[in-house]
Image (cartoon, rainbow, N blue to C red; front, side, top):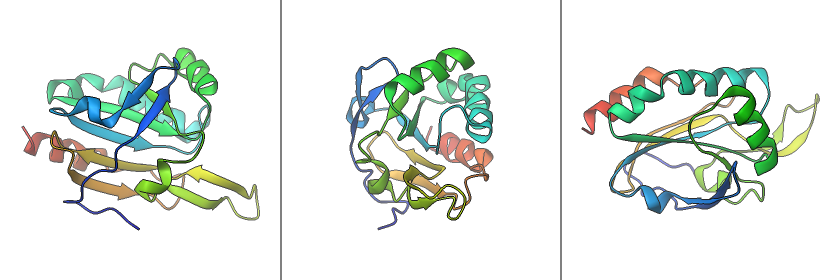
Length: 159
């Protein structure tokens, strides 16, 4: 079931790239940008997360925490984060428990080419300090990027 603005964001507790537990609940009182992405260490995902890395001050200056989520293992996320100097948590949904809650899991990724099952869809959600979704975007094509300007505009409106 698709999530819409105004819905309560599903809670989660996932391991970050360092193996530490991170929950959505711990950011209560802060706006959170939740970015699902298909695969660590791929070109489009690296471009996306590098854009976030390079603009992290914009998010921090408007009281927002960025969290990246994929079905990659914490080990793969750690190597990727270190290689690219990512300065925000990357969370492992390795057991594919959270991505479906956000309608952000492909049944089959790249049908006919790879046929991988259970890969996170590139998606973006802004969750306000009370845990309510204020922005939701799911990119059906993995090469598409979220509308970062709209994300920023929504975050600024929450100040």
